[in-house]
Length: 88
Image (cartoon, rainbow, N blue to C red; front, top):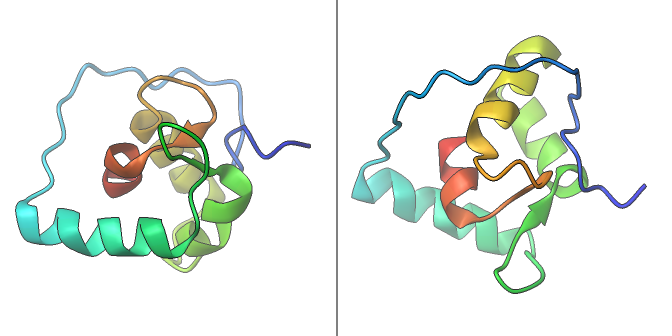
């Protein structure tokens, strides 16, 4: 596969319309991690294959990680840009 999908996939819609806020210090921390994972493209994005291991380190269940991915992948392209990554 091309890695362009939710690595915790399930066909469930979690749309809630909620807004998430990441403060400046947290955003800088997540940006550093995002760029250390080698994003590609324009705009730069990370595939599920690259993000999966980082998300698994959280210790959260696959169900929770699937929901986080679906909520963070705002444009539903199966990849995370820096802002989406900070949300995840």
